[in-house]
Image 1 (cartoon, rainbow, N blue to C red):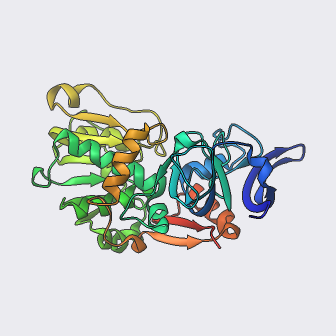
Image 2: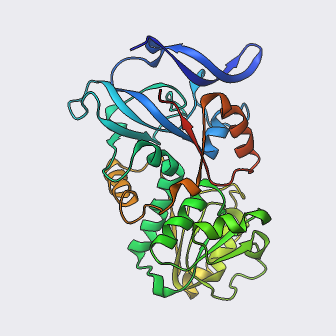
Image 3: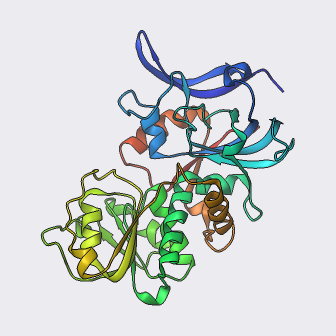
Length: 330
């Protein structure tokens, strides 16, 4: 194994904030844990924040960006992981306060690592990635609440993003009638190909003029927050539920208690970064089986390390449709 490897690094310097691909030494990853020969990572909105001077996400400098990764074990101080094992790691402090997955090698604590489940190859795992895992967590929360396909239509907001596109494909695969909301008017064909039965504009899910609006949705997956989430709460059918995981539309929630006390709706907060290992194993097993989208290639665009800069800029602007998968293996 070479002592040097390529990585995408963000760093605060005396000359300002710099980021880009450079060579690192294995010793810069520290000691202990599980050393992974990274095959793939993926690009998430949080990565764009971590790589940005104004993102207020990165907590160390320099930082190898990338909040998720999949690859094979090349060293381990934990007998649970042997040389050559295929593993996934994402969330926790990876790519934020601990060197992450935009690198040919990554070292992470063994308690942050789980085996790649049967039914997924490494590339598929990162087409899913953190965003798809978040979508799956959201859907499982709704299913555990009792949501069934015969309950009525389900809304997915921010549907062209990583969480949204995965949620559309997963819900459609389970037989739900999915309505996808997007701010990209040219994305309707993409969303219908993923399984959406209907596509509406972002403006169509932004009305918050009344605390209760026409009961429309049996459930929803929301990755937007702000007025969009408030609208979803006001339009859920009695007993409905929404799983919320994002705040790209704002952290404020302009709503009232009325949807909760007059329609008995539920709001589930989804924290995929801090999910316990038992939860992760359960969700990944579902992703590898009944929640696995039928056509993962429809979601993914594959890039290399040298193309990351452009991808991070695009996701910062909200311009990405689907998922960027970063190929790192030889």
